[in-house]
Image (cartoon, rainbow, N blue to C red; front, side):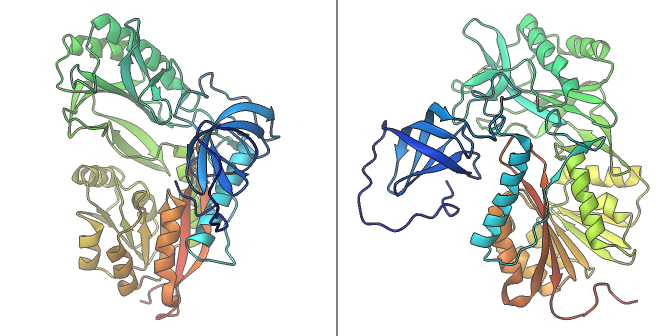
Length: 480
C-alpha cells in the first residue's frame, strides 16, 4: 500500500493499537486504492467503503507500526458526499470501489490524486493540472453504463447454479450478477441468458483449485457506436458438446451479436485469455467507430473500455499539439493504433511500436481499412525499436502499461530529442516517476497535465501529460 500520500510523523513510541480493536475516526481523504483514510493518534487507518466526512467505528484488521487497515463497523455520521449505490451488491462486489461516493467528488478525488503524485513523487511545483475530463453522451456525464467490454469469471453456487460476476475484494468468492450498472446495458440480457444456457447444456465450469472443468470466463464486448456485439467463452480445452448449435442459436436470438468465439487457456494462471481464439459462429470481430475511423475489434483486442472518455482525451491531445501536417509522430506502446490512426490523419508520417504481433496485425488492417498510407507499425519492444528508428520524431506519444516506461526508453527519448512528448498513463505514481526523469537537468518542461475519467465508480484515473523540449531547436516544428 502506497503511504507516501499520507506521511507519518516519526516517533519511537510503540503503537498501542491491536488487531480486532474497535476505534472511532473521521475519514478525511481517499487513497489511490479507493479506501477512505483517517487517523487515530499517530496511526493512518485505511478503511474500504468510506467517504471523506464520514465519522465511523472501525474494526482494525491489520496493524503495522505506522498504519493499519480496518473494516467499517458502524457509520456514525454520513458524509455529504455519500450516496446510495446504484448497484444492489456494491458492498460485496469487487468490481467498483466508489459506488457510494457522489460522482462530482469522485472527479475531485481523482484530480487530487494526480496532483499529489506529481508533487510528492515527481517533485513538481507550480503545476497546471486541468479539470478532469468525464466521458459524455449528449453533453451529459456518462458515469454508469459506460463499459464496452466485461469479462466475468464463472462459478457454481451451492445449489448447483451457474454463476457469473466479480470477486469480492481480496478474495476469490464470486458475487453473482444478472446485470451490472457500469457495463453497457445492451449486454445485460446476454449475461443472464448465457448463464442459463450453460446450465442447460450441463457444460462443466472450471475449478481453479483442482484444474478441472471447462468454462473459466464469459467475455462480452460491444461497439458503442455500431451496437455490434461479440461473445467469447474462455475455456480450458474446448470440449463443449453442442457448442456449434448453441452458438448458432445465440446468433439467431440476438440480432446484434456478430460472432461467438472460443478462447483456449489451459494454463494454471489468473491470466484471463490464452493464446488461441477460434470463431465458432459468425465473424471473429465487431466493428466500432472511433474518432471518425472504423476499427475492427477481436475478442482479445485491447481497446479502451470507455469509448467516450477515450475520444475526449484524444480531442484534448489534438488541441494541445495543434498539428500543422508536417510532423513525424512516433506512438510507443501503440496497441492496435487507437490513437496512432486518428493522429496519422493530421501529420506527415506516423510510426507505431508494439510488442504484441497480433495487435500490430490489427493495426495494419485498420490502417488499410481507413485508407491511411502514411503510417507504419513495427513489432518489438519499445526498448529495442526506439533507438533503431529510421526517422527523427517531432512528437513521441507514450502509452505504457501501469508499471510505466523502462528507464532505457526515457534515456533514448532524451537522446533523440523530440520537440514534444505526450505521456498517457493510467497510474499517477509511475507517471510522476517517469516525468521526473524526463524533466531532470532541464531537458523538458512539463507544460500541463490533462486527467480523464476512463473508469467511473473506481479509484483509477487516466492522464495525458504534455512536455516541451527546453534546449536545442527553438521551434516546435521541424523546418522544411
